[in-house]
Length: 178
Image 1 (tube, helix red, strand yellow):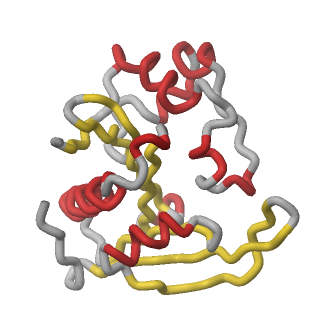
Image 2 (tube, rainbow, N blue to C red):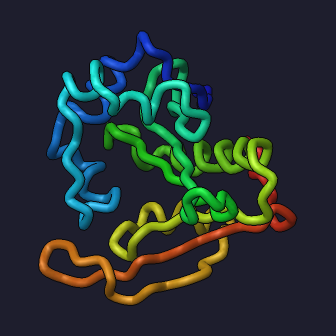
């Protein structure tokens, strides 16, 4: 099994939409910030509209491929907007049959390695919520430090959850060996 990260190509947009957004009730949507109630783009919006611009030829969005098959995406964004000094990373593995195989750990490790090459920053962060125990597990397995817990600020399914922030400094990062 070979995991790689690479940009989404224009000729892959429809296939990516099928993988990521065709099922508005996909299991991954219940774990990736579900309290935001984001609406997934329609095929038309994604393939022919501006939605795809967020993904195609964006160095901060890379497709996770296993043996050349698309399975997910890693991303990054500046938490502080135009200042560009506070970078957060994210990951989504869309098809739940690909969960529990170590893909998230491997992809996030590769992504953090890649981000260090792309940006001249001392810190890379990751934000999740206390209900996403798999994401917490990936962060802790990669030795990211739990830097903050903002208690009971995420409301989902009738209860409050914590927002949880992890991070690593450049001089702390030790890339796991494949």
